[in-house]
Length: 219
Image (tube, rainbow, N blue to C red):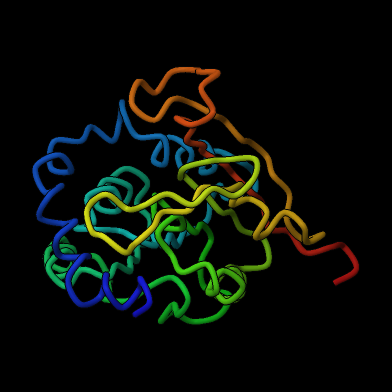
């Protein structure tokens, strides 16, 4: 069975229940790299005076999206494998749907910012091409991607400690997009997974990356 099917059947809800309190107590203003990255993007010339549309893959109960909608007055959308999480997100007035990253149930060229937060490392590796294709499809010609996940310069496979037979995959997830001439990496920061400070311990690296999608001037 593929990992996405396990998450859709049970592990998505299990993750939601394990992390419910932690997520509820999160301060998006002070302690959230993804929210900080999106706020920075919102100050660029490419996004100012726009009615921003933001999609978060792995949105959980939608706390970050609700905070962004209130802070930026933007339109927010989410997708998550947990039916319980999506039920809560919908109650928070978020257009959210149950699903996984390789099939995004949103219109083409509809999103200004696409967020992947600690979800790509749990995706089936054979789906990565489709995930990148779907991300590119829903993004507007001039748009942004934020990726926050485990990082390794060369791919590493670790056992997922919450369920036997599942794995998390560390790699440089920028590479799904940065190879293409339409995509550029504007920022890539490595920090320690727990302390959130700089570290030389490569095993503990997580990264926050900001990528820009901009079609060439000849398109």
